[in-house]
Image (tube, rainbow, N blue to C red; front, side, top):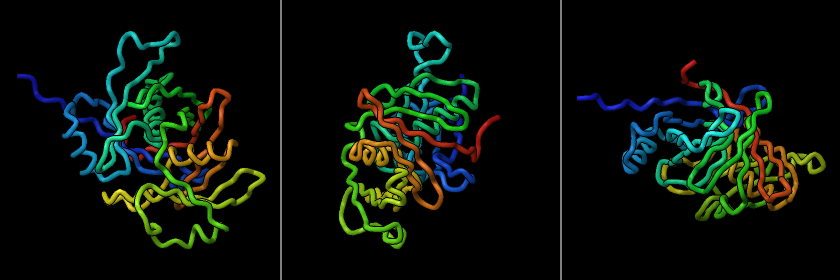
Length: 238
């Protein structure tokens, strides 16, 4: 009898600042088939306790593209729910696959196909504003007001609080509170919320979130918005 496949878990920090600080931890199960059942995936994500955990599916042969890269399908879970789209899991997984010798042309979460590009240390993914609905943004008067928060503001549902750090340069100070009741009080870096904020302003942003994270955004003419950032390995294979 063949022994069951053991999940190959990697951990990275996504959207790190220039000095390597910050970055939202992400769990990536490279061989998603080892945890094929949805309930088992949800239980593993809850046990790990990261904001999100990704399960990578083997690319289909007919999805390979001309340069040898591939479209890779993903399944994204928080400790309590399955997500159709999320920014930091996509950036982190794209970086990891390149690190492991498998650069990708696109990733395919449940929401749809997400193009991927690599620019030096920065990994870019492109999503659509309608994929990040439900995340409310709230502008504060000053950066100090954002930083003074000691926890989530009252209310339910995902909330992205932010203030201009430098309006001319497009630099924003932000914090994200999922308010899901699953133990994740605050996200260190949140790509989907930054995508929503970029869509609302219609301009590129340089978002400084959490304790030291940095999220870069770029709107595109086709209505998609690119999210870019640096990734640092925590526990991964060479």
